[in-house]
Image 1 (cartoon, one colour):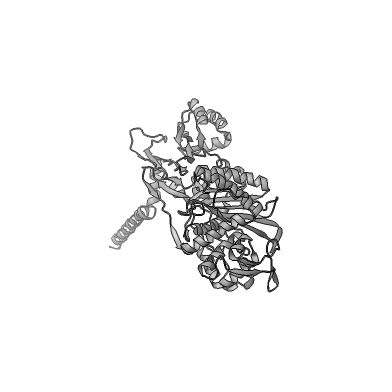
Image 2: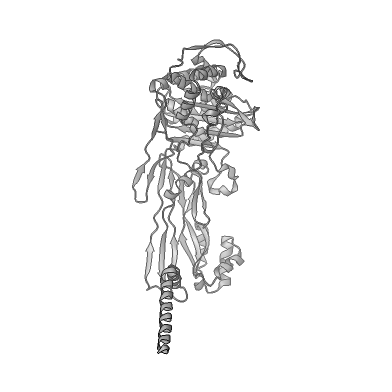
Length: 558
């Protein structure tokens, strides 16, 4: 009897082992085994999506795709591997031994040989009439306007898997929208790895990426880039930026930086040039910041344009002495004259009236210390120090734009709030997004908050007009136009102190002052002809403004 039970127990154990093994294969290892089985009888091939284009506001292409191809080999169909390699490698400038090794892998039935091969080379390869050599469309980025707007656009490179990926600028920020969704072709194969013509085949078509329509005006962008390069040469600056914004919408009409790079051949340039300094780099704004502090004091009814103060000499704060930029003093002057003379002493008086708490509140409300939300990839936002860390000297120097770091996009947006009845806008480069089916979504202008009242904005605008008409740069102003603006000259901090011989010259303004169509900021780093914004950045601003009046069809007002 025990023998029967022993045999029965053995059968039970064996049966249980078989069941457990089957469960292991179907559950734990199920996906892996199914994949291995599929690999044995099906062949899969990715069908790349066409990346979406980028258009200027008038519909002109800034980035499109040019015909290019993925060149691939099917090793099991190649009759003479040596002849195949000797024919293909010279056309594509590939290492023959490496190509031969790739094609000789017995586990591969489809081998990508070269990506984004342009049409002339593909024509040469097709003329060879080689069995086992195939082609699949794989569009390549093309820039009809060459390097125009490079640091706005960004570029397309490869990710760790060799797939297209956008980097920097719009290509990086909108990568998901631009790249679309790849398709796939799945077909049954025979024992040799060749597709079975009568077998089951599935083809999922690629979904092309969306197209971006920008606020960027191609004509204005061209003007700005050309004039910036001329200004850089004329004034001997090492770097320069210009950004033009529509104050009513927050739309970026132009954005230029120099030096720049060519996105078609980005690998030939220093990586430091890839980032857009208008959104990614900080600087001290100097006297352009004075209009914001003055606007805050007017809003709080602590001063008026006609209110006076005594500018009789330098102001001492602890161990520090604050002087006017030219060490000249004018006695009793109005707040309007404080801006016209760009008086640091006068601005310390205004900041003391405003006080630390209100000054810091307005600085934050104007958007400093936080990102603007602009739709490009690499925006940074210099942090403001904690309220408890602001001393009396910090309040004083901030009133004339030293000791505080901002980005150009933050500064131009803050100035645009004055031009826009006190409303701070979220800046945007993209105006509309279109999909491959013709549907579109508009990126609507976004009001963030009203920093100052409309009446205050009108008052400070008139003070800025007076600063242009009566300031140091009045000789360069285009005749017949009312322009509101302010120069800035900030010393550059180096190793914990300011270098008196190195400055960032700037000018911010908007026009026409009564109905602003654009607000613009110009910055020049370390101009050699003169350190002063009134003699470098301001003339460049007015030169560009003159061109913009013509481009926008704005006739003289008087």
